[in-house]
Length: 485
Figure: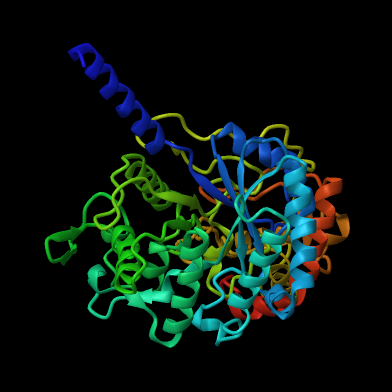
């Protein structure tokens, strides 16, 4: 081949590799919001920002319909509370596949994966789903085969990174957790046989949250003062170390070629001292730049397939793990970007906001200037408001941590007022609250104006609120972060 021909071939191969390495990133789309954006608005948001894959936690008909013809690849989820029914027999799985996969594929939705359950082996579940997860996977697989879709749609299960570990802390010593070792091998064998990926959720933030001595710089991608040396490999960040612990576990048990998908990875922006936009941007941009390089990790070089967690903040999520749970989004509740972020890595284009968002009136609910903090009605009102709305931005080193006592009360009252669509009855609190058209936001603390409810959003929001109202009310007494007056 002539020199010019060889050079052209090299350039073509390099371009192909770069195109592969710079593929779009996936993202998790959660729907536990009191006022969700219309599904069509969110799909446009995904497209405008170059997300080419989306992971859903449930098969919501309106969302799947909105993804029709979008060109976005979909991983559709099955909640844990459905596993027992799907494991019990073929009919439930066949009905589910017919309604939630076949129908939408026939209508032009590009469904690639079914995620059976979500982190079902978390130790905090106390073994609740150990006996139903794999049978449910088998049932769904059989249903897909019967529907003629098994070649197109793969069955997997997103697992928390706690299903694998290293006794020495070195990635090369990775293995599956002892108490579920046999079950994990059964699942991995299934994945290998069907060509499905191992989906792992990796959260360096959680490592930092649980261990105050965890080296902060090890969570990011700019080098660490406390790297992990593993033979001839030095790990400078916890993501690579965690990922390769899984790679080593797969190798150790005879499955070196099972592909890995990072099902969830991200950093929250509020609700904890280490959850803020600065750290979130540092982590997410570092991660995106890291995977855009195409270098992969020491034990698994090459492209990394990943889904950011998450797309939009969810003000109705459980805060049992921590107040930060409602603040994982790279966008706020209304589809506005929280910070500059180049999804392709480096210093390229940044995030595009949602279009055509309609808000309620510019009106807020605050504590009356004449009201006294010593009044019992204040404490009762705050407890009630925070039990039924979102007060997770209040607290030590949070976005609203600088508010004074009256500011905390006003924030709680406004949160409840907005959740209730600015109903005048939601801004009374036995006569100690009033509405205002002057924005009470201060510094980093944002007093929101809620999205105007839509026909599609009302049904979703009502279901979410109904499911969580009791738990949220009880949580007010456990997680109340408003200072004592």
